[in-house]
Length: 433
Image (cartoon, rainbow, N blue to C red; front, side, top):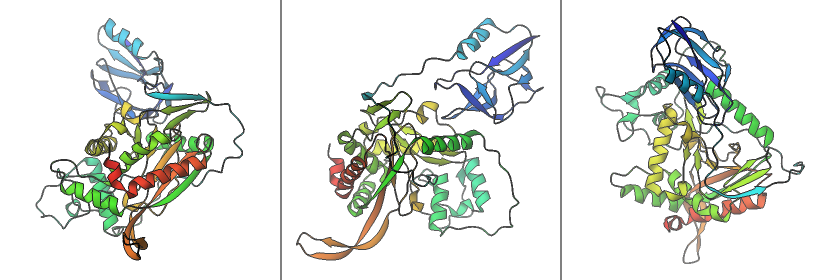
């Protein structure tokens, strides 16, 4: 018999420690080679750990919610015979922290002399947790014998909400996702099932929920936020989107998000201070040439922000595919760590629950976050080509932006949103190369 100490490996995010989220094995249990025995949480993602050997677990690093440093003992396993040298060497190499990767797409780095930020505007109210953009509206009740396709997480959420999945319209592939439940709730008037009062419960704040809490608190504590909101007439934009969807063929159905991201990418070159990251410890602002667009997505584990890399190089249909793929990966816990980091600007939306205006919290170390709000119809004065002013029913949407006042001035933020508004109200310009 031999004892093998499996150390916490460096998983390539430049982190110093990780949090124990869930043990799948306990002391005394047998673990097989390549079997997952614990889930570890980093700042970006949950990563399962697999055993490199088969044996009995003698010791574990701690309980759920505790932190484990890179290179320190995670688990001790008793194995039959000797542990192969290559396993020992690989364990030692994997647990040695690697140097942090350098940013390859930097356009400009600006040294910043730190000064008193007392003249910056006060932080505004905290951000409600963003959710994905609208999913398709519910359809009439399907046949009772129809097979309902959904993941276990979606089924559990539906049970908790008292929703009959047979009442929910699935996506085009026949599978019901979290966004479809959100749409059902929205379009059924905030449907809430009658149920007995639930008992009080205490929930330990660990894992993703704790990371969200820490990141949001750090953002509000360190960044002097200010927000700016502008109303946009998206009547023509919605007409263009409807036309594109009618002629899309086998391509994915477009929401407003791909159009918005494309408009943002076209606007950013004139406002490089928006597409930036601020290392306040080093006193350096990095203005990025590429747009790595963070996309806030609500999951059962909490808010996650997968990143669309090089969004400026993708067309509407490619963006739609990436949005769907990344949102699904985040909700199912399959998003890779590299898909959850490296963002230069984030867009967040509450979809059909978007409200009139939002004051989103910046995804630090980014310096801005953009929040499209709910589209509403209301009458407004419009001047026609004949010069006559008349009242028409128009589709209106507010655009919110929160900025880091240490990096972005109010004038710059307002000018950026006005330029974005011009594109959204003249959507043909969005499609011009």
